[in-house]
Image 1 (cartoon, one colour):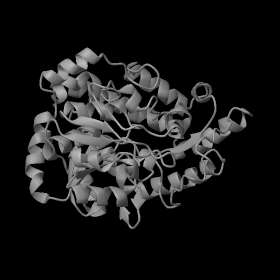
Image 2 (cartoon, rainbow, N blue to C red):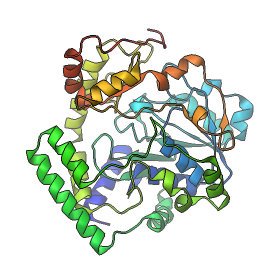
Image 3 (cartoon, rainbow, N blue to C red):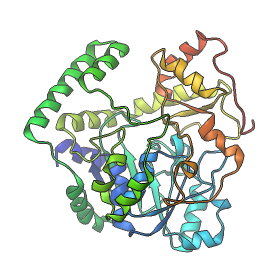
Image 4 (tube, helix red, strand yellow):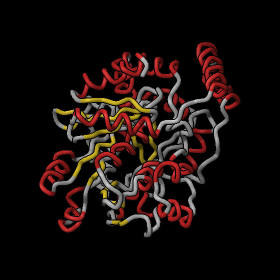
Length: 395
């Protein structure tokens, strides 16, 4: 392990007061948690508003996802609407902390303790989120973080409270991680050098075009979800699961999710972490501007000191709005439509229905990066009437 990788682990140890293991991605961190703490066939309660990649990571670990009911006010799980018989059938619950909005950690913690259920924190969108006086990532025995989100770095981190698990986790991570060959490493190093040079000189639009030329993006989704063939998924499960069998789905949006990052990338990520307070300040400023627009219902109460990953705005004709902003250089992402309980075939997941009004979190939500708030507001100002509020959740 490189010095910068150890530096990243030390950042998380200090911040969360627990052990930390740096790995190639947040999704690999989640997979390691599933394989270390759970067993194939275990039932895990998850939110239907989440990335389809996370869903397939759950399946790759051999688990049975139970799509829980959504809280219309927060876009996260509503643990109060899960009946006792369901709690008794579960082995684990995974939080989402959607866009950095904290889950109901008090209720989830109490339910999990009472039923002897493992609580897993997916903190990939919640690097700066708290519930009460504790950070998200400090409630459960294990939490997964992504460094590609808040700080636009590379890799992920698995935090855990039991220090004696570090060695088996590190061995499992080693067995799941791919190494670059000499030729591939040289090619990727050159690509990074070109992009780093461009980053210092190019405009955002020119840099985006250059990135596409150097590392073209694959078209892997139809709409907001990746397509899948049920027979292929069932076959992958019957063949024993694991990342090799589920790779075609788990790799979407990040084909290097289990490839050891380059030293240059890790060093840059550590530098971004050391500047996190500036990142946090800019996110808080951007979030204040976006929340003041009146497109987020007052029922969504986010503490003012939480630096959100995305600010959820609720708009009419969302797809038209998305196309408008994308055409002006601002693509908006992290939309989970349809919700996983409608996306997943009954053969792959159990479902607890959500209230109808919760559909706004997939149908109407427009997630905006607070770091790009000024660009968003500029396009909005130049396009009068482009946004119309959809206050399906109530104000």
